[in-house]
Length: 171
Image (cartoon, rainbow, N blue to C red; front, side, top):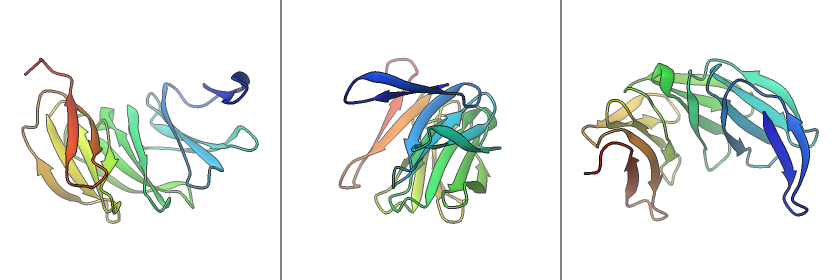
C-alpha cells in the first residue's frame, strides 16, 4: 500500500492499494502522477495525485522492481528490476514500457547523467555498473569489478563524478 499524508498538517489522508511489495515512489514532472515500483509483481502503479487512486498498472518492469529515476524532461522513467536483471524504460506520456535491457545480475539503484542520455545502473550480484542509453535502451558500456554488492549510485551536481555504495564486506 501507499499511505498519503498531508505534509503540512502531518496527518494521514488516504491509504491506496497498489501492487505487491511497493518499494519506491516518484512523481511525474508536473506532479499529476506518482509512480510506485512494486517488486513482487514486477509492476508500476500509476497514481492520479488529485484523485488519489491508481489509474493504471504498468506490467513487466522486472521482478524486484526497485530503483527508479525520471529523466530531466519528464518524458521517461528508468526502472530497475533486479530479480530479472532488467532495466525498463517507460514512456510517461503513454505510461508504457518502451524499451527493455537484460544485463548484469540484480540491477538495483539507478541514476541519470546530467543530460539524461545515460542511466548508470549498479548490479549488486555481478559487482559492476551497466551504462544504458535512455533513448535506445541499448547497453553503452559496462564498468566491471566495481565492488562487492554495488547498490545505490549518485552523480555529482557537476556531472564529473559518480558515487557508488557497496553492501559487501568493508574494503
